[in-house]
Length: 184
Image 1 (cartoon, rainbow, N blue to C red):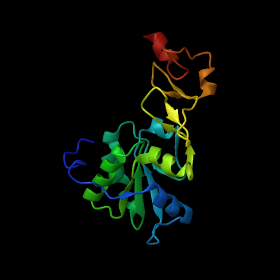
Image 2 (cartoon, rainbow, N blue to C red):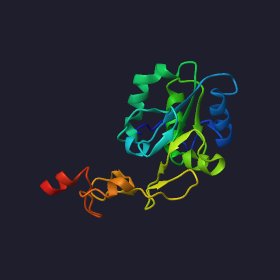
Image 3 (cartoon, helix red, strand yellow):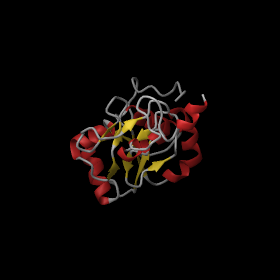
Image 4 (cartoon, helix red, strand yellow):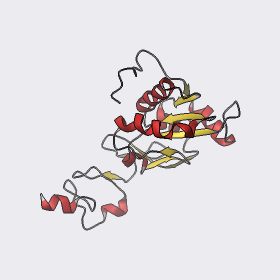
């Protein structure tokens, strides 16, 4: 995030457990009656695979864009409880620390991220699957690999339908990048 003040090894952001978050989402508010805002801190291509219902997504192309996006939208969080989340809990902790540092109150990170949420409470309030940075590409709420693949050429996440495109060549390109690859 290019912010030397954010050092999760030295101080932790407050976290919320999967079970507590599910209760808050079931009720539509936290234990103090504040509306809960889910804030996706992942990159846009990850969010396209799945996210929490109603989550804010600032279409980040890289995590270093997060501070500027929050600055533009900081008024969206007034009087609300913000829960930042990511795949495994690293980016959302940094995000929560950043928001605290700039004076946004009532900020939490989802402890263990989406994958721990899936493990502990399943897919309640979550739409889709979760992108992972390994050969599995995406996991469903039962933590089982899905049929999605990632294009070798442009790294786009491809659904089974997209994999049937005539422009998809495993290890080469897909419909999103075949024209750029052919021109190279």
